[in-house]
Amino acid sequence: MIEKIKELIRRYYEPLSYLFFGGLATLLNIVLGILFRWVGLGTLLNTLLDNFLCILFAYFTNRQWVFRSRTKGGAAVKEFCSFVGCRLGTLVLDVAVMWLGVDVLGAYLIAPAHQDLWFLGVKLFTQVLIVVCNYIFSKLIIFKKK
Image (tube, rainbow, N blue to C red; front, side, top):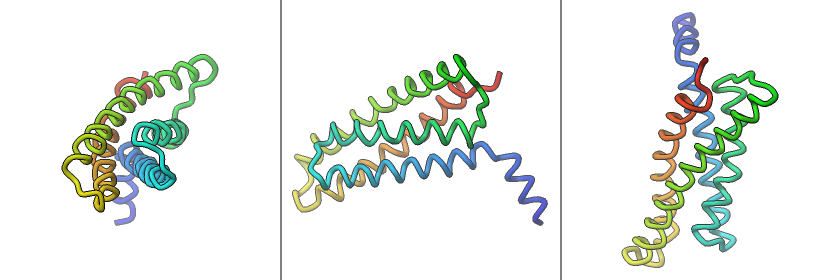
């Protein structure tokens, strides 16, 4: 039984580790989003700042533990720039959905007493979209096997 589990982990290491570290990045994003909202940052600045911090976290965890990249020098710089470029694409998606969901729809449809809960729901929704998009970008563009 233990050998079967080890084999499954070996076979599916990459998606399992991506889910684990992607989950940590998502949790970090949500915690930072709530914290930044609590201190009074607007949706746009909140989303930009939490994404910036999560992009750095995600790059190092993805490089080291998920995709086990061993690039060095110029290739590592290219890899980092590719990672940030793709993450900026999903940042645009995150900002657009957060703005539409929180600042536009939430402002008109949700009672003021429920705005924080609505913010959290929209944040969770965007994070699911972003984890899927980021995995696709990471697998097909950034850390693709040569």
